[in-house]
Image 1 (cartoon, rainbow, N blue to C red):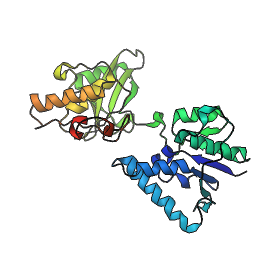
Image 2 (image 1 turned 90 degrees about the vertical axis):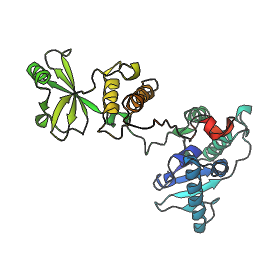
Image 3 (image 1 turned 135 degrees about the vertical axis):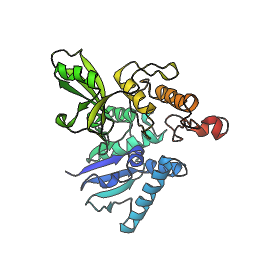
Length: 300
């Protein structure tokens, strides 16, 4: 049986090619989604750009037929723009008072007609509500990254005790027999017999060796690293030979604080840089800055 994937607005904004990623099934875009795209297309951020692109792509498909009847896609599927359904006999909370409810009711109406409907949304709460009214729901996971496969910036190598002792004395270890490493990747050398006996090192690609952390005792502007990850971040940020550092971590893990502290040291204390610039994305993650009072500079 052919599946009917009903697409939420956030999926289209997340991946402008998503309508072509459902094989030879039916893809339905509720009219409420089209209206939301129309409202977003004037935005100057990434959402506005994606809204304009996907709107033009849907419009270009009109040459293949009527969107309200369904038009063929290159992958063998069918795209259809679905109008709001007649009012269904549901609780007052689900009456058409919001675009979210209109989208859910469109999917529910198609399901009640006997179609195998799957509602696709990146909105967790909307997926919960959809499931509560009896819809089959899925997250859009085509471009979802498995966090376990991301580059962590460091790895642990178990070695004999004498290797760690020798590292502390010679200040380097030949890395060739331990595998492949990325430039500036950090290494935790751990004693096979005693896991509390360790050493922190950084891979020096030019000489293919592990070397000690150069800034191991640094406390920029009084900031002291609390764990190995913060120590690694501090080492990268204070190294003049590294021009770009990207940090990822959960909220509150110290990414911004350590970056600013190192930036202040390099700018004010050492004079390596003339200015320290702190930027934040204009793309809203909460309320759009347009709702906030003041000029753009004051809002940021």
